[in-house]
Length: 157
Length: 157
DNA sequence: TGTGAAACATGGCTTTT
DNA sequence: AAAAGCCATGTTTCACA
Image 1 (cartoon, protein in one colour):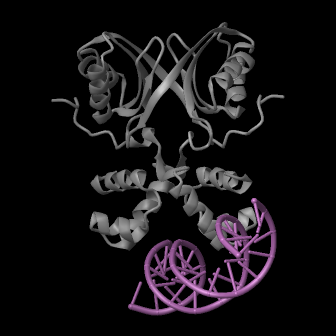
Image 2 (cartoon, helix red, strand yellow; image 1 turned 180 degrees about the vertical axis):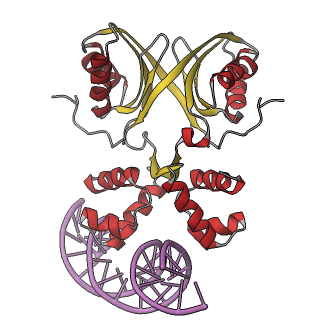
Image 3 (cartoon, helix red, strand yellow; image 1 turned 60 degrees about the vertical axis):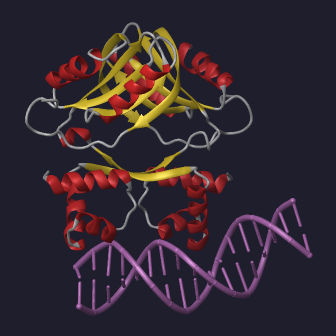
């Protein structure tokens, strides 16, 4: 991971479909070199894939929420079972398995408030071992581009 | 948005870099049709972009956390200011602006626990109008592929 | 279906250890 | 001396009209 790799990762996060030539020219290197580096990044597992990003509102799911779930007791079987169950539900966008007060934070995207209520009542609260559920509406969701950790201690010197 | 569009969106979320020919063959349509459809999906804003996904652990940031922040008072200026400030920090991966008990949930990826502490103390807790901060470690983070809302009422009939 | 452009493979050259 | 990285070129495949 040198400076060039970092720049490649950054560029490909911004636009994962630009041609190899564009990318090479942008960074001032030869296309063949560029191709090799990108391949190496994938092989090493730094870049894990390329994905289309979709606008969920355009797909008829304009309402997003975060549902915090606490399990009791927190036995492995219950935790994994619930995770797998929620993963398969079509309303689910992402799941965080966390420590702290909650055990799961589920990100969902739904059509309207009624579907959100149904999701919570039918799929979450009804499940076994659920001790607590709290729902927060998502007003905005910003995802940033992520780079490598910069070496050398504190980040605001 | 018909069945074909839904299938295209699904496929391109799975692999955003497959060639138009592959994609067309997989769905049993002509490459020209496929190209047109995908272009239309982008133009309509259903597909908003293509991005490389990176493994943050491979970038030297193996520790992820969710930081819940409550502001008081919740004036517009403070909310937007804090959001913009946090967005620019290199540790930040994503931000949810939410309703409910909390106002923000910040997803961060850091090198180690020390850097997490520094982030909370130096960048979050020190900020103006911060009423409460809670940190949860992320054990696992699953992102699912998202499709269009299926018409016709309840989803578990 | 055809044309221009892109991805990819290979071999030679330069730099680093 | 060995290894790794970079680049130029030829071939195959693709996007696009």
